[in-house]
Length: 117
Image 1 (cartoon, helix red, strand yellow):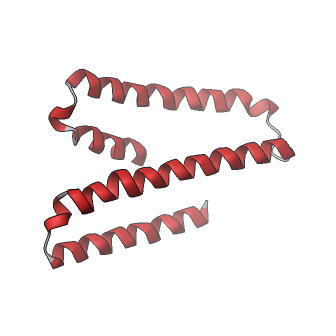
Image 2: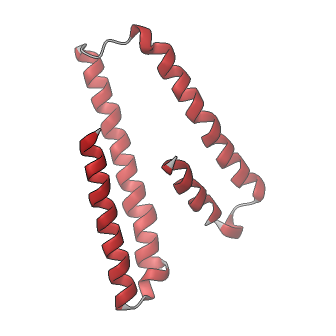
């Protein structure tokens, strides 16, 4: 759910840089790839061996690639654009401190979520 909200906010933030059809295609790709991935996961569940050495290596590799992409997108594409080139670049001290506090609080809450799963 949160990925869809984040993607929707970024697509709407494109403004006039992307046409209606380009935005529609982006949303459609997300809406189609998620169920396809779930279907593949359900399909291979019967032959999946989570204790196999090659399975553990494959899962670790894919997880690390996914984490790297997520970090790059979060730090470079989202945070840098908002903090360096966006409205927070010229914001006052109070707004900057509120934004930083919210950012750190979100990181802490997400780390608790990661610990529980």
